[in-house]
Length: 480
Image 1: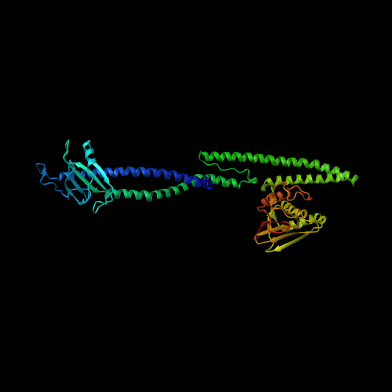
Image 2 (image 1 turned 120 degrees about the horizontal axis):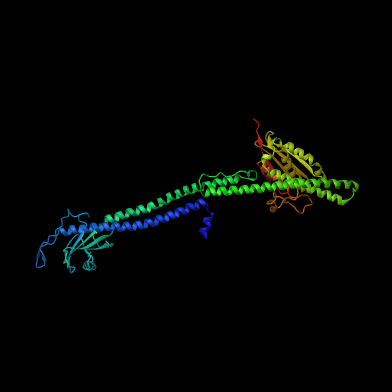
């Protein structure tokens, strides 16, 4: 479970690399074990063949004279002739069929190799018998950690009378085996490191087309739905995925365009009857100026008209920057314009609008769409007036900075709860549904959309203790 949790947190590239290293490492380890086993067998066979030839050479140096079964000149060994083992390191015994040692060469001391099992094997038809003596402590001045013993019949007969036992140090065998062990011990980690690097490289190359698709898809927003992913020249699954994603983008574009067209057409169609209905109500109002039903009807018509206009504006914004007319403007001019338009609304609640300009740097122009920016600042300022208590004030500030121009508006109303902050800029979401202030939750959603079109965002300062402080920054256009 823990391994699965850790693996799920890794990237696909890391998982593919680990899988590659695991498979390659396991295969290499199993191959190394088998290779070590067969090399051990092969080296032992070569060693035994050398020992067998050595024993034949030793048997050919024997000079025996027989007189009533007594050897007069039992054994002479030409040490310069016997190879491949170092001179003087071999232990040689000559036994008769009863196991009696007739003669020996070398320092045996208390060491006496077993012969009974060997004689049984040779009597059963084997030409020789081999045995490894792992405990070489009983051999004085042992040349190696282990010795290889061969029991060899000297007289080739149906019932041999003499047996030669030769024990030689396994120095060459142990050295070769140790070298193989070192190669495997140090070679396997090296192979795994190479596999890890190769796995990362191969995984990166394999996943690179998908990464490029992800980067390209992340850049495709509402205004870029007409863009498509480039198709690779290869005829593989990557091309099929790109084609499938392009088809999906095409369906999304068509659905989005259809939705925008429906909203725009429906809004236009609804505005006409609402305008006519408002005219009828206003005529009736002149005839009955004290009729509360007519007043309520006119108010609801204005609300519906506002919603429809907001939806039209959203459809226009969603259509993209290409449909908008950007120009170089001074932000403070727009702010002064909306303050004059909101004087009537603020006066109704006896709210004083304080406007200030902070001259951190020289006044600079910004690039934007005048009507949309007017709507943005209007929404933020109108909200500040709506949610402020009567006989209070709101603070509007424009800060001329070196690279940016910042607009901020602060009210001293009830503020916004932490829960509502998460939904503040969503469509048809209101900060305080219990408030008597009129609204349908489209103002801030439209304002944030407008800010996004101008490559910025509206920030809500959560550090203030009372009311709300909204701010938005725009990049300046520096004059040459």
